[in-house]
Length: 601
Image 1 (cartoon, rainbow, N blue to C red):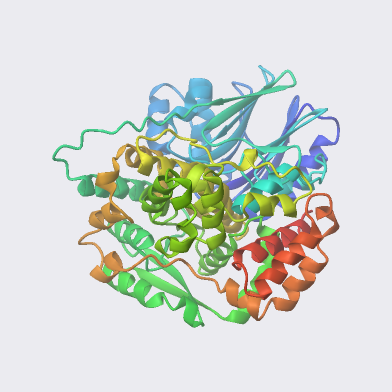
Image 2: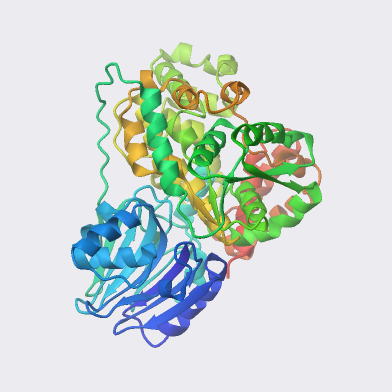
């Protein structure tokens, strides 16, 4: 796992800029670094050595026979099979790492090489003979890649903050992007919080040639429902997931599994224990009642026989962690702090690679959105007099009263009922908080992937929106800030395609199919316990330990926010919360935005 950076077509500032970007990303790759000045481009890399940690995996990696150079961030889980295939075609290898497989695959198959890759990746290849830069990002957007077009050429990096550190991109916040942040708690790709900086979309490649950038999409999952017949779908899912976990366990560095004691991580840990003897599992134990979950993690660890490590954390340690977590935050997020805490704990135990249960909730309705969206969509079609009574029966849905009232008045919302459930600030609130036009068009969730039925549509929306913009982005930034590679077996693209094809009656409600796939592997208490997220006591902090800090920050936000956020409206959000109106998420999101802005290089 690495950080990558580069420039094409820029002046003599390019080398200094790429070197500065790599220094900004040192934590992403503390084991090695390199900058290569090429004819027309400068490429840079910082390396976290996972596969073949020897110097033969150094980047940028060159293919002098073809005149190409590669900087690569990721992990190909099928690199050994691809290496055998390429060797049979006459390709010669000098290392045992997957980086060289990417370089040789491009040399042999060209830009369509990405269609053969199974894994997470973001990379850039400079072809000196064609004077062309090729960029690629994995299908689900697990690994990030950002770029900016300047009057002089293209600049790219693994982090937005790295682009700013290079000095070639203006530190100007994007008003429209921050509207999406307020609406959904994270900036919606391909926008970023910095004006003029874009994310290469998941499942896309790009070519920069003759001063112009063109992008194309290479992954088009086809989720047509299959005839399940008499198939044991729980067994099929079990086999697919076991195969994914087995592939994700390949590592030449210390590897373990995040274990919270919930179904998602417990199933991965059980399958990992079948794949590798003495697998290490790691959990965090908070010294506060809100987070007393470790009895379940210990129960699972004892059942599967893992080498279990519990990292204790006090409330004081959690508070002390916040400044480092905000520094690690690459784009503003209302989430991510918990990921920083768990990643830091895993790294402290000596791990360089961790397996995460991220993605299971989105694929198998862990949030219970299927029934809630279906009910809201049906209610939207009621006659208006009946619809006005919807807020009165709001207890039937775990939904904020202001959302129900808005839904009953407008009958619509960007992204439909799903968008309403996911929203943080409603459109009128966004309009009052921003100095822009208040349009939510850029933030509207859309079906990034096609879907067969309502269940599939919700899954597709989560994958293309919340998973990509919040969970994966935060996981990458927060884990790599701790020099830790996090892998997500549930988001293996073959498993995702399979889940998208399954009809709703097969998947069931609230991860029923996943629980059936885990039957016999885990204690019954794990299979039947209700969902319980990884808790950090934010609400208590806003009432107690952080009251003065948050109030002072929102009273005098960073000057960089002056052009995009109405400080008076932000203070009113805080006052409403202190008076018992509204959820803690809204003032927290504004506080997180301010702290992220303060952390910009």
